[in-house]
Image 1 (cartoon, rainbow, N blue to C red):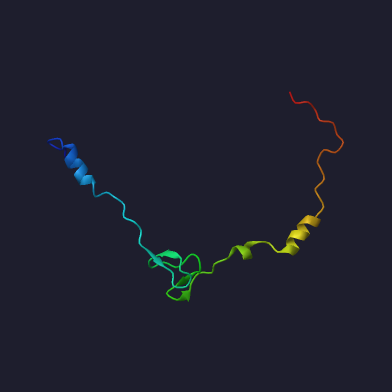
Image 2 (image 1 turned 60 degrees about the horizontal axis):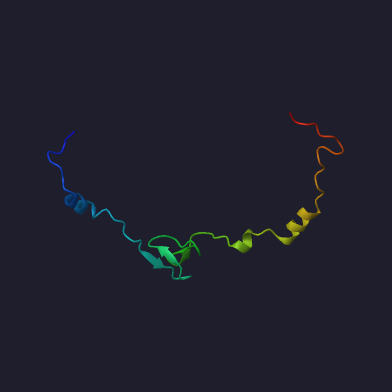
Length: 92
């Protein structure tokens, strides 16, 4: 493996590394919902790409369980405790 003959100065090293910076991301706006999206990607908010719906997006309203299921869960009997009336043994 090659080894450098002479040491590079700090200025020369830092000048070379000055180009190692990150570039800001280029965002576009969605024509349907005007949210920020990456270019050439489907919108994560409304699921459209080039005027067509390509992703099925579930909203928070659809994710919530219905009232009927919530009431059914409340009416379920509670599980009986495993130790009823028994004395607990001391742990050593």
